[in-house]
Image (cartoon, rainbow, N blue to C red; front, side, top):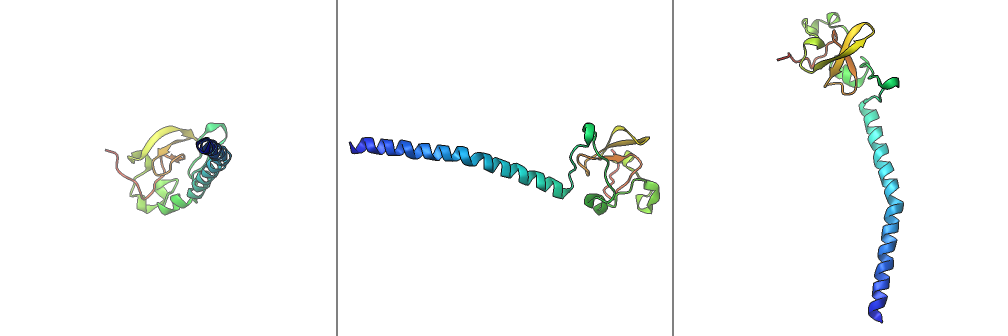
Length: 125
């Protein structure tokens, strides 16, 4: 008789634990997803613009400022004539505002102009 009580007790104990997991799991998952989204927002990762178009890099963005990003390489003597078009991090994507624009590994999820420049410029092989 004592053995069957232990089995029932073990069954109900396990049942409570499983039910608790189903109650707690959605809260934990939501918390993780929310904190991930907040972390991306703090890093400056921009959500996709309307229509799925990638946003352009904002020269006032923290990362852009850190690498001295300028939209026109001719406006800074630091570029020494180099521009994104000749950088190994750049890949042509589309035309934006009448100018060639592309992706850059420095600015994930954003586009840069081909005539832009930043201090992370690296010669294409």
